View: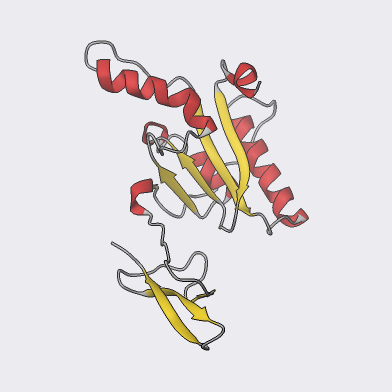
Length: 184
């Protein structure tokens, strides 16, 4: 049903919350830096770029076919992206507060005004404090032992390769049974 409503959109935003996260945006590399205003308007903490995340994301449903066609026929038949599409992760599921919602709504409204989808004159886009990062620059840590997760680095902390980011504690033996370190 959603695909039927969105197939001809010029702007497609997939809006939701992650399990636990700072606010961040996913978009295709073809949309960067033109899409930086969305990231700045929302004061997102990160922007991750990827053509195909492999997760069958809703926003990629509308942009990925055109990206694949461009890669296949780009020189012979230049094919632009079909629409601006992005996924916005509005922090974690436990971060639902009026103050966040009000700022997020104002940011989305400014972005849509700037793109001509909503009437009115938007304020200037805030300055962007960082550049986008390739999604493959992130790493998932898997632990093969049971226990209680104790973070040693907080959300948004910058970590170096090899730095301890979490420990797994065994409540029965009262000690550490595993550690997670930052990858490459």
